[in-house]
Image (cartoon, rainbow, N blue to C red; front, top):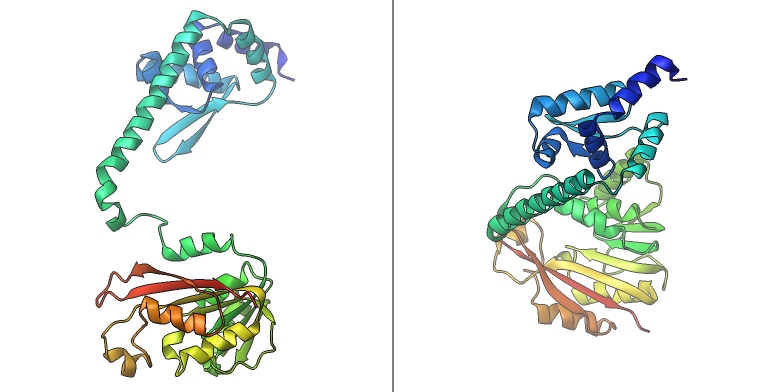
Length: 311
């Protein structure tokens, strides 16, 4: 129970015109002390005094965000009493004036945000921004991917395999290197991921049954294949009708050093060559596009190709 003394203090708090105006604004949305100063055209000490009293009687609560405090109406008996007061005075000219001030504040904030993005638009892609990572983007986009049976050909560091496992019914990870598969299995176990099956094998001759998967992903693996067409034919064999193929690989380049240092057998593929390989493997004509240019020298370009098995 609030008690007679508490009720008396609450009623006194609500009896002030400025405090009623503050409560009316806070019933619209959460605001900072600076926001209230701007809308009400009042000094900091005056606004702070009123907010302190309203907090003391339990009508208002605050939260810290960095160096600023934001205020809102507190749920409970005091708020119910304020709601009755507000309803009786909803059409008052003071409240109408304050709402106009609140809308002006919103417009100013929108204008400042728009001006910032207009100012940095030309260089925005070069900015180092918090939370802006390709892994984060990939994880977000994977949430749109179907809950299905995936086949990951040539797993590399296993990062994509682990991300696929988060949305997949199951993932079959195929690689020629048993050590790569062992490392992947250890990382999956550490994360509590149980829907990955590792298979040691050649991506040009897969030890898997026909029509056993819904999606085949071949990410940066085709340039390691002795016969890329054979790999793509195996992908076609493994997919169910209506299954999808995703190929991510390098655009044709002239960096010969990758053959010895990185075991690349092909210096990427032109859009036409990749499209012809996929079509010859039995797929309809794929969509092939340039996805991204590596920001580090030698600035290799990534190609992405997508198609669906129709027969």
